[in-house]
Image 1 (tube, one colour):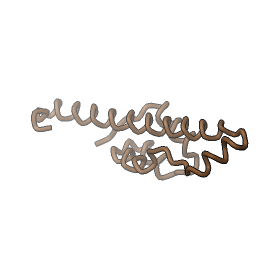
Image 2: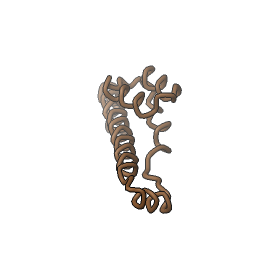
Image 3: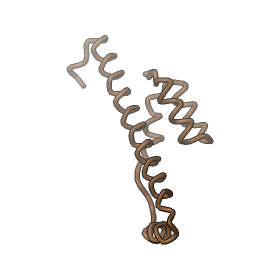
Length: 101
């Protein structure tokens, strides 16, 4: 099944992960498994000590940037999964087996 990822999704993926050619290629080729590649990258991971250091050094903005990036990754993943679901349903409906999904 080929998924037509939007230009914005592809651009976001390349901005968030500029060196991750496997993800870029999967999206460019319309592979439904591209979201599976992205799934392990979802989450907000900051060590407690790093949070304390950031606030002590008046660099809270670093934590804010990490949180914004994490939110952008999660949003991209959600958009990709939603698009895959819509594409699967369209194919199922077209082939008269939508009731099997």
